[in-house]
Structures are given as structure tokens and as C-alpha cells.
Length: 126
Image (cartoon, rainbow, N blue to C red; front, side, top):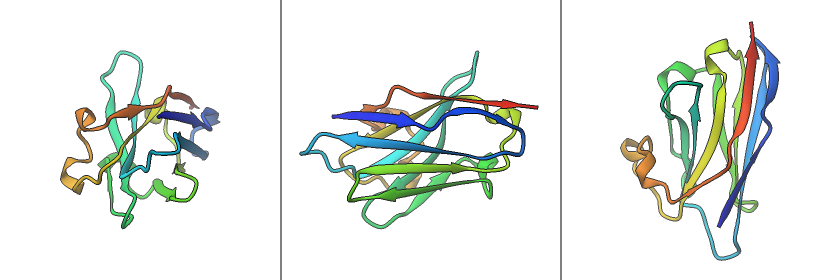
């Protein structure tokens, strides 16, 4: 199983980006997919997650109203639409996945995800 993240780039504060993450592997069906991020000098943190079967989500409070997660089950793809970006959103964004569903209370736990993408860099200029 491989996760391929894309969509990062340089954007001005207040701008938007859409990240995508595709899961490959014909036998793999994602149960939960998520986005984490890591800024320079900081620990990796949870951003947003979605459960594939019913679309239940969990998000980081600081992205509420600005970021939205969605998924295309047929394409085994998760998207992170980021709007009103702030300099503090700048980081390497990683997608993660696991074959089974998580309850929303567990979606933030990095150790529960089996597969990770390579990361895509988001830079926000002020």
C-alpha cells in the first residue's frame, strides 16, 4: 500500500490550497484516512480525519471553518481543502490511512494509522 500526497505549494496568507492523497494497492480499502502536519522544529500534529463508510470527521480546533476534508471512495482518495490560510498553517502535510474504521475519538492518534504518505509542503507567506 502506498499513499501519494500532492497539492502543496506556496500561497499567500488568506489564500487556498487543496491537498489530495491517493491510496494505491488493489486489495486495500481505506477505513479511515487523515491528514497530519509537521512544522519546522515542532512535533507532527493531527489536522483532520474522515471515516470512509459514513463520512464522520474529526478536526483540529484551529482549522475549524477554514479546512474541509472529503473523500472519494471509488478513487480511494482523500482531499483537504484549505482556505483562509495563515502563516502558522505552513508545514509538511502527511496523509495517513488504515484499513479499518476509527471512532472519532481515536482519529487523532498517529500510532493507529498503518500507512503514511511522503508529505507535501505547504508554505504560507505573510
